[in-house]
Image (cartoon, rainbow, N blue to C red):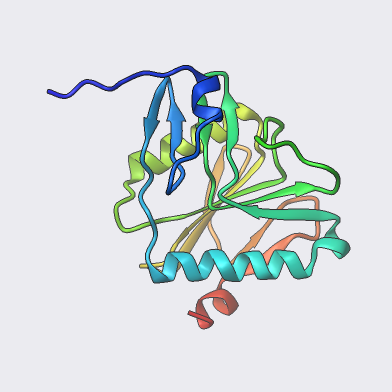
Length: 167
C-alpha cells in the first residue's frame, strides 16, 4: 500500500502544479480533469458571468485556489466574488461556487467538496452534470434540482437550457 507524502501548506501554496492540484490535510491531490463538455460549460459560464460583471457587481474566475480551512485548499471550476482587489488565494467565502462534474467524479467526492465549501461559509453552490444535462442548486443546506440556477437575494442566475444548447 502506497503512503502519501505530506507537505506543509506554505510549501503547497508556493508551488505551481500543471495541472493545478488541491491540498487536502497535508496531501497534494490530483483533480479529475474535464473533457470537452466540462471545459465548454466552464467557458460558457465564465463568458456569461463576465458579461454581467458590472451589472451584478461581481468578478468571475476559474480554477482559483480557495482555502476552505487551515488544512484544505480546493480549486472550484467557476467562482464568483464581489468587486474589488482579490488575494492570490481566496480565504473569504465567495458569492458562488460552481462545480462541473468530470467523468471520474463520484457522488462522495462531490459531497466532500460541498461540505468543505459549507464549512468555509459559502451559501450557494451549483453542481452541473454535463452527462445527464442536470444541475443541483444548494442554498444553505438544501439541495434541489433546478433548470434555472440562482444565487438567492441577488440578480445572479444562469439558465441550463441556454447553457446546454450551446454545447
